[in-house]
Image 1 (cartoon, rainbow, N blue to C red):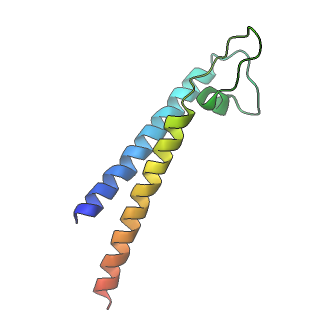
Image 2: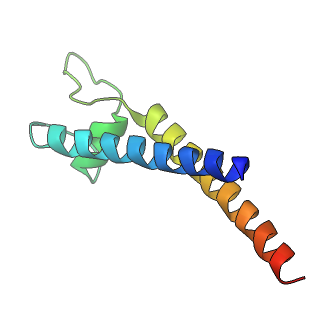
Length: 92
């Protein structure tokens, strides 16, 4: 039971943090005037290197974004494993 609660907090915490980074990136992407790559949103979140004296308009939140996705995946794995053990005990 305790691991289920911990897994749930990891999962929800990672999703909330990743979602807030995506929302912040989408709000910031509307004010970007120059970017490189295909998507303004991913440029706003991950950024790119600076060329010359040009100002890089990015949030540079790539590392926290990837970390929050990993935390959510760890939480989902914990929840899945605990529910697997529960159903295994019920039906055996």
